[in-house]
Length: 368
Image (cartoon, rainbow, N blue to C red; front, side, top):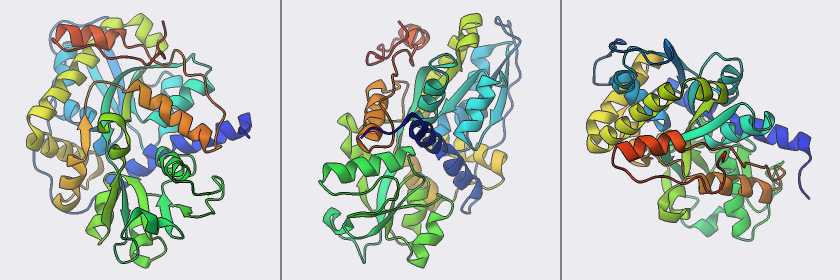
């Protein structure tokens, strides 16, 4: 039976908490000193239609487009005399609240909080205007207990939180194998143990979990503790792509300052181009920004494999957002949400055309 609207709200709220867990893990850090210097590019040149634009993002590798674009001054350069004012968040709900309260204008955020914010406001507070990153999620296990996917039956596997993006993905994977698990309790053919990312490494070393379906850098941290990668979630998606970070904007800001929105998107597109052309420099830049923001950069043993599993792209991969929502419905965690209108990709496609790139699609979920 479909979940009630109350369950929908609770499930989506739980899903929206994913960035808190990822951001907290990034803040924990794992060792070595990051390379690179802190950079600050001043707002110079002709001012756009707003004096400043307030952009929110998370101190996490899956938000590296924002980390690097800020650190290298790429986004500010596109804004000219309009100031880039940055705020960082550790939770999806707090970023959505900031957007609703007119405390930020644009945000880098995961798919579940974006869906949550859109559904709760009945489509009136935000639009997804671009993509940022794909991938970076793995199933890692204790190799002494689990050697094949079939060995997961009867084992205790962690996900970050009930209803979050990875929890939904794992429940869907279990369902597709024909196994049974009660989504709410996590009990069944596999025990799904909801465990915060920052707690997962200790839970693994203590033996209270046998593995985890988790985002980076948690997966690589567990591998550094002796776990092995059994499955990369990207292998389950067409062309190995699925959205992990989107760019959202308040509808009010989009309407009043389209030139500023386009400038931020140009900065994002140029940042992703630079990241993909200079992966080692970009990795160091992102880690330098993490050190600046959290005081604790990621060590190479965790940073290198985590970075290599994330793809930075401009396409929001709209079809995979709908699929993620459908998986949550199939798991019984929520009613099918109406996502029509969640995307407005016209500004991004204008930028991509000017940059000589192909247009991206909204999978029928566009505002027009």
